[in-house]
Image (cartoon, rainbow, N blue to C red; front, side, top):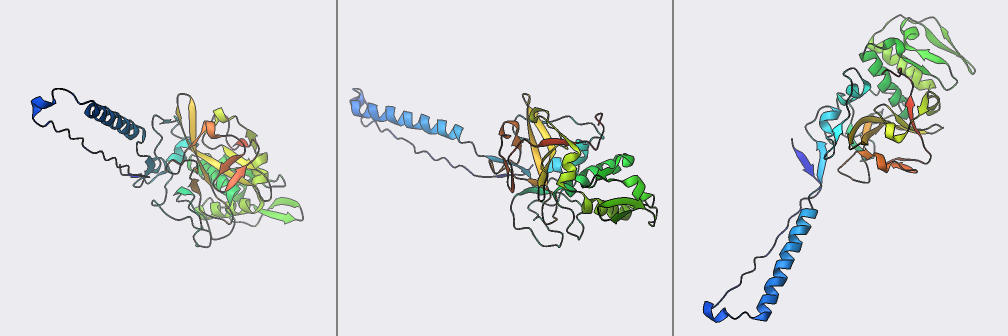
Length: 312
């Protein structure tokens, strides 16, 4: 595995040469020479100690990795949490990512002026300014449920509380809006195709937000954090970041965070500004205000969307 290094530490030490001219003449030890030898030994020992303490920081990014789990390695002594084969965690770990150092693209094809991505998901974005932060989280859950045979569970609420489910949409029903009232109406073609699925999600993105996502979620303690949980501040604008992987060591967890943002942009894993070569966030780092590269959450806001049953 090819790993990048943040710094390459070079330690150079000189060689102390003690010349004992006319050997027998030096049998009587010169105090000044003895002091110099003792001092030199102390300096070598100190240099060796510093060399041990200053081990080079190794990047946790594997440039050759093609999925989330392959691209981002776990910290030393940590192990990824166990996840069921059909779980959201396994789904996200196996999600394809774009080549290393890929820029974050906006919906219009322009590059985002930011270096905050540890890696970028190879996820559909669309050409409209719709798939922003909450919408990216909604897409993850929708794609997972569809891919894992849970299509009938795909349902998201609009800000006004209207329940928009994929089962109704793919049957040919469509959304009607009259003022603040939203209702189902006919007129669409029945289809469960990819194109129909994308049309359904665009409809959800148009009427859902961090406000509705927050209402669909319940608070979680940091020690219980798991893949799929979110840090969220509902509002206009608000923001949300999603836990997309977890690992643990001695009962303590670390996690990766990913986000979409405004304007609509590719879903990407965030760096952790506290340690540039290590994108993981550690359980003990979750103190408020909780800072991510582009947003600060000031109050406790770790939550779990209730899109899946407790068994999942």
